[in-house]
Image 1 (cartoon, rainbow, N blue to C red):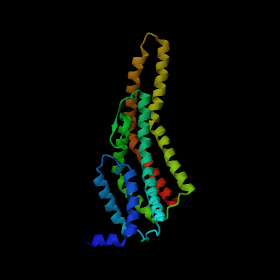
Image 2: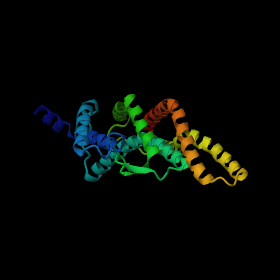
Image 3: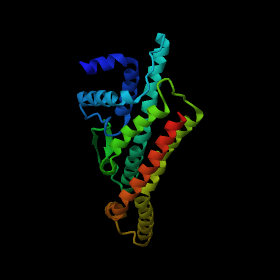
Length: 256
């Protein structure tokens, strides 16, 4: 009964907190996965909003319907921008796996990704899962909630402003997708360039060899060996990417 009275007494504040929380939960990695039941997502959104409402300054409801719609839309955009900024990092790491797969010649070996409801290469999905496990091991899911709380401190309800700096920060995050893809796929791509050069020299030197069959097996074997060799530094590289990501997320919150 006291819970209902609290929500009714702070209905406008609770509504805006609930809206922004829902936008982040539905767009952030792990929380927004489509294989998580909708009941779990809605319950988590309600629980987090209930916890954050007392920590958020009271705001009155907008006086008119257009102002109310714009305010709710601003809260949705605020939460979605933060959630997408976090998700861009995982997209870049999965993209790196796809680049390596195509370079190795196993790009057709794809599987259904239940998290994103799309086809993904097996190697890309493996790197994405490893990144998610590292994300959970360093309490990244809790950092998402902390970023949500900090967003209410920096951007109170009605305080969202889509400035040029905010758009520039979002573009920087989208650019990070391609930068991370090149960085994480670089070991495989680099070694296979030299392998293809060596195979080309052999094809010219010994034309009797069927280099198509030999090259296909060699590139796959060398690619997987290179992935195994680079796995020990994969965690360090992912943690460094997460560190830059959180700095960028908090900077994005400040400029919004």
